[in-house]
Image (tube, rainbow, N blue to C red; front, side, top):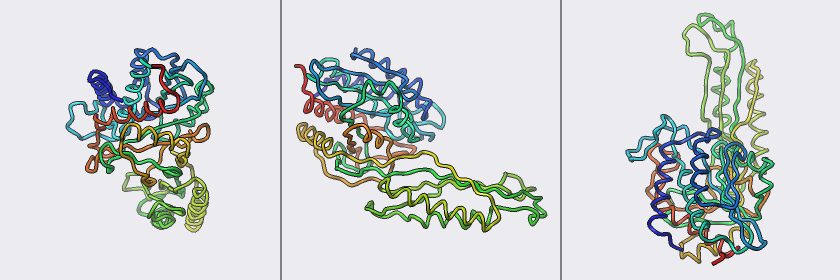
Length: 384
């Protein structure tokens, strides 16, 4: 399946405009408005907005009854300062599309360009632009939205660009593809004192020094196989930035990661037990909370088979690949559909995801759109 130069040019322009104006998770109002405007030009049969926050969906109906295929991208950017010298670099300080969600969204609008010309023969195609993927909250909010019942899919397909994989090549496998993860915040509460008399207070300093290596020892990483666990301390804070106060409060933030959801509960229980024991031993109160909770992503065999037929039909090289360490909010869609995500190579030497100099490769837009459209054709057909 080929696109003309004008279609590709418009998709590139749209992608770069999104890149210039990134918005963080839960704040994607202007991004959603830009997507809505672009989709309105394609005259879908239905447009939905405000899904789970700022989510947007376009529905293209077939003439006959059939399954619903949902194609999903993401709207949000990251709280990272972009440092690249590209002309379309972020115009918003400390915010950037450094994961490629701008490219994923542009791919879906390119799919919409073709669906505007050729509806599916049967069933329907839903283009979903999901908010708040980076925090793990967006998919759950979209699915919980009452309006989601109107577009509940039989199949949900998604992609993510992947630096380190040869350009334009695809990795696709059944079973687990992204890890489960969650952020653990441990608060240690003691009592402040004058810095000249620290013995009059209860400082969390020693407890923090013991707890950080104890947490990381619970999961040292390694190959992504059954039993994989990784704990990464991402932030720590002790007291206030003052020389006259011995600290009475401390925080440790750590990310817990397992290959599958089932192993996460055991890791959580062990982390909590260690935190409580260390805090009690130091005479501290301890409180814990969880943030950025991601389920593991599991590719359904039927959805994978559909994507493989699409890749073969388009002559796109693909390999089974391996699970990857990062988490992905797409895993929630497995609760409501046969879902699968494939990884689209951004190049062996391309800057990595979340790097400050990352930029989505424009030449991938047509490749991703071709795979999605071929999958639609394989399952639903086109009307002409």
